[in-house]
Length: 478
Image 1 (cartoon, rainbow, N blue to C red):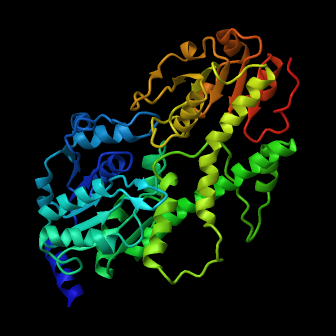
Image 2: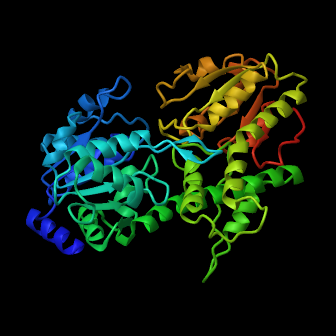
Image 3: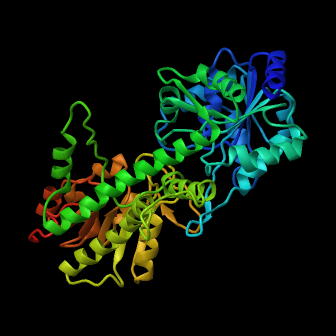
């Protein structure tokens, strides 16, 4: 009976025509623009709270301007197109939800405390409550946010039913379709990546498939249950984090053994053939961003809640996934160790040293500064008594941090130059140019992203330290 009533309501409502996307961030903006660009959809509303910190996005988006900085190919052109066509509008009036056929929520889901696995769903659940208040029979609600397994069919469903007086799977469709995007390639990722779609029942899955299929190009929809979709998303990010931890640990080993991790990586990565998977990621100064730094904990919480007393695992052994997370969290601390070692080679203490920190965003050529490893490094060196000036070409502001716009000013008189982000612009200055700005005979350079040529800097008189560069880190000072 449940499926029959919902099927009847959806059939009566007809094809999806009007869509809402709640949360105008790195996920919601490109998703809304792509929905609006699809010929089969008539109108898309982007919902953004009129708050002191993010209310400005409403006017910008309604001018066809992207509030996201950094390089996002195709996004601003697409926004201009859909705004001009009057197919997209950003609003803070959540009552418009009642006019829609489908609503997608793209709201961040951080953790209050990762140690006790308590997620902070306050923003997401506020969005869910807003949807519930205006929910009408026959509508589709989709959670795109990465969430702890069990959330869609559990508390999210409960909130929607309580606020609306309707029943999920009977009066409205409910699904989880997790985003799978990386900043710098948002539009391409949404179009080309396969889309995981998991409804709380078959009818919900089918309706959510109807929503996402039109915006895919080479990607296809992969249907499953809502909980399986939640596990898929948290697991794929956990596996990526695990892969990064593996290469980061290998980099630390290579430093200790005096060899180049990039030579080893090239060798291992070259092994290809049927059934062989040896693809390796890249080591670096740390893992940041909203996803990888938390999604392992969503997966861990999911198994502790849904699999309580059922998990068979080696007694007393830590989670492999959480251990990987700890290794990646350690990398900014390793950057501190390299900094100390570099200064020791020129007989300078860390206390009192002037550090030029290049890059605040967690990923190259982007303004995404959520959970940046640069912040951990900065806090550590300030605690040790050093002074730090910070440059980033894309990040305009960050709470409690002064970001300099002139890289020459940041490099002036620096004892140590620390590359934390692999922005393209940091690959351009020559060793001689940087050395002249520091005014030091033997400035120290710490390369956390493999963006400079060690030999060129060593030849110019720098003391070089790089992650995974055991072949160079003990070089003679020239």
